[in-house]
Length: 394
Image 1 (cartoon, one colour):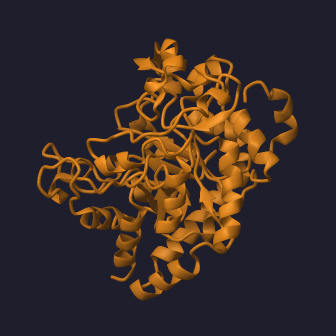
Image 2: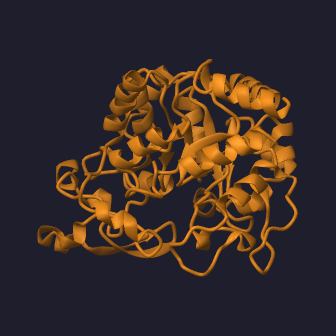
């Protein structure tokens, strides 16, 4: 992407002002849905489910299939993506975008693929194992940027967290690594097949790291979106990143809805670390920081702990003011990530101690929905949809 600066001047689609207007419109739509009485809200969510234009046509709270249906299938595979749609997800997070050596974008949780593919069992790639510094962290394994697309296509996906999801290992080796362009074509195929607009929610992964390697992500994403006619303000593609400067760059390239991802309050986005910007996520979620984000994005994707902090014992504390603060400046909130298994739930919702056992996920969903969030990423879209129905019917 960062080799395509010549295209950028011709392809820029919007201004900050236009984005601010869109953000305000999204907030208005979300507030209208959440403000209805229970029965009416439930009916509204059903009828609006995938109609209308742009973000305003999505149900609230929106159920986003995190890396597909990764509670049930190895993540970032077409098996996972399609199951998320089968389960009823409103949006599929397809996918986390990382580049190959020859400049293609593929969908992997991280550029290091030792934990998500069978690369370690391929003797022809044994010599590719190496140690790199990824966003300041020494990381050993196999990296997508050291493989051509043709080489990556010889690999197969495996379950990333088998201790929590041993049942998912049944599907190890079944699916290959999808490219972003394949996902865009798949999106159209599934939209025709299912008779409703399929939405996707890709993320630029480690954009500063890849730009320094000459493999800039944003320009590549924009070029593919333009090629497939999905770079408009009402396009069913929401773009996200943990690096605010990546979202700012995308803001200059495409008209798509944009979301800034936010980790723990004391963390710093890596682009801030790289440029010496001293601000932390706590600064970004302050009223001043949120107003700044609203100038170039439509939403934020905070960790759930920023919405409701956890006490020292792992139980939920009182909700923060983040939802109200973000809504005040026209930003929607899609926090991450709800999972059914005990280790990922607040302590009061766990049942037993088994790492792969389900806790009271419905109780946790209800607590987060009550804060007024506009949607949530979940590995278990079916659970999320049932929890939403319960919430809207109250």
